[in-house]
Length: 214
Image (cartoon, rainbow, N blue to C red; front, top):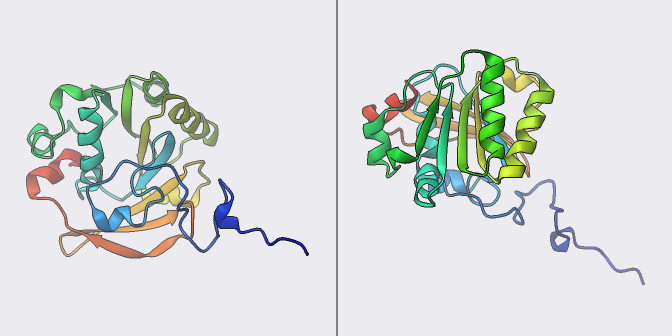
């Protein structure tokens, strides 16, 4: 009699209709409802994550506050590459993110921004790199950033316009963030498991915190 192979017991294999429970532990986001939807229970290390949104200032960066605080406590640098505005120090401090762990990089060109993100992720010194790139970014470069995140075991988060959702991406995780009634709405069109098309609602931080990405 042939044995029946249970996919749940094979490393690296998961059922298509379920979130991958075997993913390495992620960095908790600080939003319990969101962590339930993220394989590994948090933001993945060593993988590229995309946060897609239209317009800055929704509070999209605040989704990462919990993870950034933990990474800063580990003594690793948080690189902010090409942010649309200077990170708002009082909001970061209030969230427990050590300001001396933050490094803001202002590249002169798009190519310089890509190079800076690649170097930050590969360095091993950065526990996280947050970067803002145009909607149309070459797939080969995105693949290079994914590999750089793997090499440096870093949390890599790319912020892009929602229009980029129609483009292929090597990112392991893609989120679409919006705003409704003063709160954040989050969809997960790509993860290790079925997409989450019905948005979940998360409380938007206070007005000063939202200015981190304003």
